[in-house]
Amino acid sequence: MSLLLTAETPEDLRLIAARIGSLCGGGEVVVLSGDLGAGKTTFTQGLALGLGITERVTSPTFVISRLHTHPSGGVSLVHVDAYRVGSAAELDDLDLGADLSASVVVVEWGRGIAEDLSPEGLDIVITRSDSSEDERRTLMVSARGRRWTELISDPSGWVS
Ligand SMILES: Nc1ncnc2c1ncn2[C@@H]1O[C@H](COP(=O)(O)OP(=O)(O)OP(=O)(O)O)[C@@H](O)[C@H]1O
Ligand SMILES: [Mg+2]
Figure 1 (cartoon, rainbow, N blue to C red):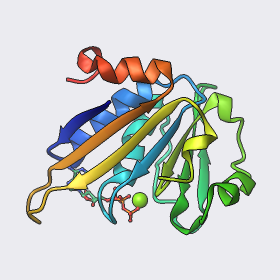
Figure 2 (tube, rainbow, N blue to C red):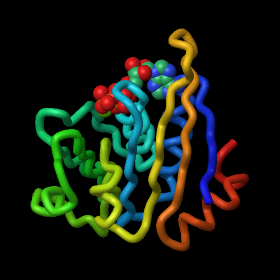
Figure 3 (tube, rainbow, N blue to C red):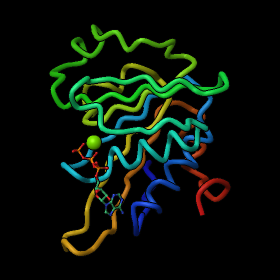
């Protein structure tokens, strides 16, 4: 089962992601896929806001992964760009520099290699509209684990 959401603007996408972030308690892995410029980093920025992380989140392309610790001991964000990571084994070998049970790990380009990092979390595919002047993005959200499966089966409480 998956949940289909639409974001008309980047702000909209950040808001959806912030709501997801505010539901995270640590230990989740959010796997993001979608073409270049789909909005994976934009999503991660919103999720960080939802966690209460004030530090600026930018694309970690040249470092593969970046740790954003929470300013007051809350859930941290580990932001991974797996574009150049070839396999789950290679991802496993990276030192993500954090206690993953107290963090949310967001993996751009993570499909097929990052799902096994945690049994809990979301797999999100972001798609652009066909028309280039249209800012709309579609998010296909699927869940891993019982809590997230319940959350996406009844999104009325957390998504407007
Ligand atoms: N509805 C929308 N949601 C998200 N981003 C949008 C939207 N409409 C336009 N944009 C623009 O699309 C771009 C998305 O860039 P972003 O870096 O988030 O994509 P990405 O998927 O991380 O790309 P990459 O594959 O290079 O990592 C931004 O410039 C953003 O302003
Ligand atoms: Mg990106």
